[in-house]
Image 1 (cartoon, rainbow, N blue to C red):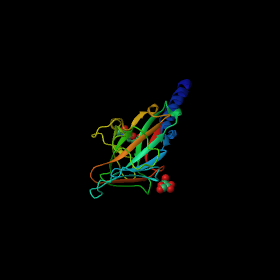
Image 2 (spheres, helix red, strand yellow; image 1 turned 180 degrees about the vertical axis):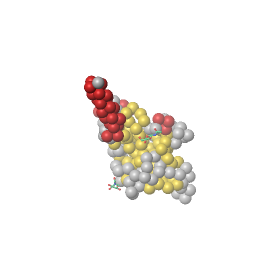
Image 3 (cartoon, rainbow, N blue to C red; image 1 turned 180 degrees about the horizontal axis):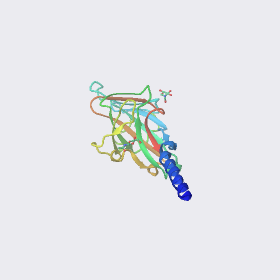
Image 4 (cartoon, protein in one colour; image 1 turned 90 degrees about the horizontal axis):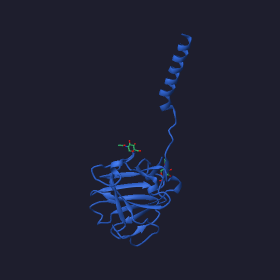
Length: 195
Ligand SMILES: *[C@@H]1O[C@H](CO)[C@@H](O)[C@H](O)[C@H]1NC(C)=O
Ligand SMILES: *[C@@H]1O[C@H](CO)[C@@H](O)[C@H](O)[C@H]1NC(C)=O
């Protein structure tokens, strides 16, 4: 009787430890990697302003074709090559804003921006369509799974080995007739979570 009691007690306390472990255990936070460089591309003039303090994605019917897209350059260290990565876009900084459709389309670039330039070969450097995001103030953007793209159906996840140890260029392009999304570089906007 005594023995059974102990065992029952042990089993009970073990069980309660196990059931409580989930919420009590601190979850390892993902490592956050922001783009090393954020730059702005003017689709009308073709000019690139390299290494800007903010990201900007904008289009409206009155801008005469001077759409702005943001070029980002990521440098993910090679040591993360066995990790899992996720491309996310947050808009949680108080100085960040979104209006209009709130939609943007993400592309990988054939070459990352590395300097200011009078012209950037529009479209030519766009490589793969990574998918479209719906940006909401105060939240993490969601992927628009109806719009296709490489990462939309997997919620932005990929093997870090795809980009680790190399420069990775991307472009964030306005989607819809009227949209403006703005964020402070290195504090908000697009980033890679490494887990
Ligand atoms: C929000 O962005 C500003 C730069 O515009 C930065 O100084 C500030 O630290 C950021 N706030 C947070 C909570 O990251
Ligand atoms: C997508 O990823 C985000 C951030 O990691 C997470 O909060 C969200 O629940 C995920 N959504 C789906 C559908 O898996």
